[in-house]
Structures are given as C-alpha cells and as structure tokens.
Image (tube, rainbow, N blue to C red; front, top):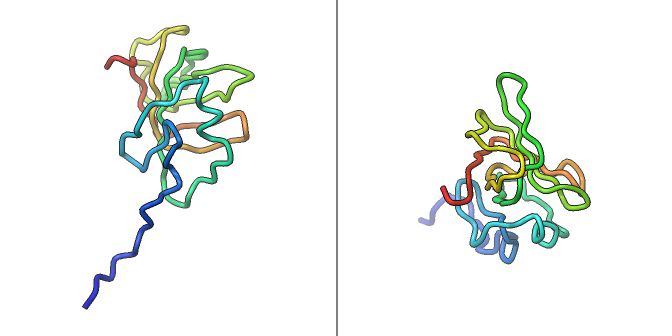
Length: 122
C-alpha cells in the first residue's frame, strides 16, 4: 500500500525569490531593502507559513514594555517590521537581519511575527 501523507509539490513558489523560505528553513540568500520589491513582486503566499529573511538599516526601534518592534527599510521601499522580545542592543541606523513568519499588510508593509533580529554577522 502507498503512503497516506499528502503529496507536496517540489516547486513551492519560492524559487528565485531572494529571502523567502519554507518555515524554519534558510533561504538561498537574504533579501536586502533594494532587492525586496523584486522578491515579493506578484508573490501570493501559500496557506502554510513562509519565512522572510531581510537585512537592512534599522529605521525604527520601539517597545510597548513587552514586545519590541524593529523596522528595516524606509519609504519608498517596502518596510519590514519584526515583532520580537528583545532589541538585542541594536540601535537605529545599524544593519540588522530580520527573519520570521511573513505576512503582507499591504504592498508597502510587511510584518514578521514571530521574528528574530540579529546583527548580520551573528
């Protein structure tokens, strides 16, 4: 008898999209603020979780006392906000790599939640 596991296509729709990966997987490359628009152009997220990895200068760091909100990239580019539990000592203007569960708010705003933020060299 055959397996009852669902068949998953080898083409996940993420091929050639810098920074995008299956959940908890590493992408073939990390997107930058400059390359993000091309990576997300026409992207229709599947029903399952997809992660985005992006690196750029921090443009906003804010906390509500429980969560931290870190943002990379600025207008007119796509802005990406990471919802996390620590600022990891990072400062505005420093480069950071954000990686987490992708959710598009609109064509110019993305939220990664849950998300991890680190210095690109870590």
